[in-house]
Image (cartoon, rainbow, N blue to C red; front, side, top):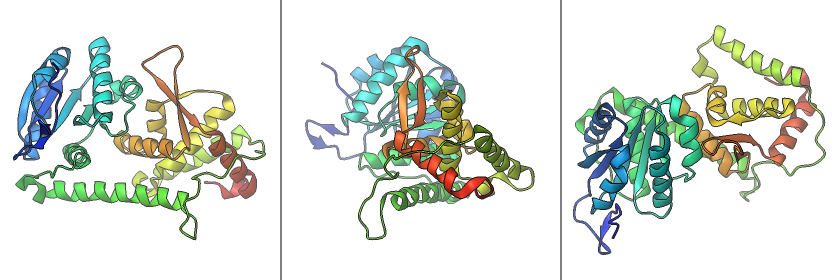
Length: 306
């Protein structure tokens, strides 16, 4: 019988927080994952390479979460594991964090369709700690941070927390009208005017030009940058994979993925499976978002859009 990872044993909460099982694609990956878990003050249940992960998971009696460290595309073994993890997290069996490099982003984003899985890309230590904290919070399990949280990493964690709050506030403003009644995040589709591809491209170029004169993070606006990139792709009939959209967002990939997830949940973006490659998904504007972008460009004119 499969003994799935669970915070509960025979229906009763354990007296101590169960440990975390870590999985990696190399011994070096396992060491890095272990360091992040231990830095957060949590225990490690065990370690397994990706090809042995399912067997190790079947043996594990109890664990709060699963941490997967991926440095390269793991092929069939990785696909099988991520499919299982996505299903298990959806069923509430355990929390999961997947830490990966940008090289593995497209196949991972195609396979992990469960939004509650924390996916981080090329993340630093504070981002890794924040992802683990969010994953544990989703299991209603308090995360005990080590004393190291009092150093400058704590400031980075607060910054990440503020960023998540800003995303939530922005989406709330998009979807809630002045009277407090929830409204669609995008106006219903209507007759959408034509938009010049040259106009859209000039706006994108103008936005990128700002970084020549000012720090790029002063103008970070990933939602708008992704909207512009997807409109441009729609006009020239190109398909945009997740990795390309994250680059267009002009923010760290982990931040871009948070926005991508939120915008998809709001119905602004749509994920489409690549019919020729099951390990890749494309992102496009919803019909409502496309119409809204086109009407916006028509209303404000070239000079008003940056």
